[in-house]
Length: 109
Image (cartoon, rainbow, N blue to C red; front, top):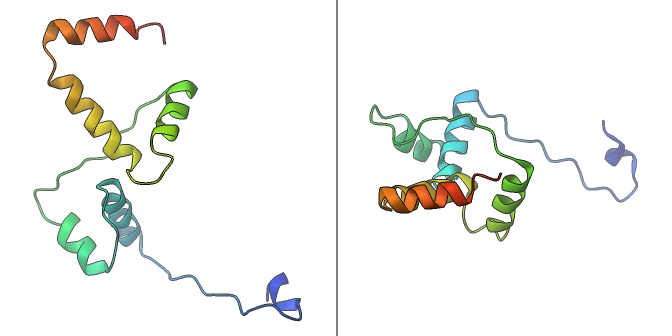
């Protein structure tokens, strides 16, 4: 029994759905792709096949970069990971000279 149960007009506490670790990871992967998880079958169809589209990555960002990324995705219409994939693709499509200019201009961070 929680504190909410002690209140006179409290609504009964909702039991959270227990997810397996695999379902949780698949849901996070779908979220990263900009998709919503409707069923666990959708997660299985999308993420469990051999030709998996995405891999986990670990990297660090400065506080400024994190804040800018959060502001860019603040309206909730795009996931941070999807925005990073877009930015990487845009940078990759530039010429080597343009890439070097962009990298030298942002090397102060």
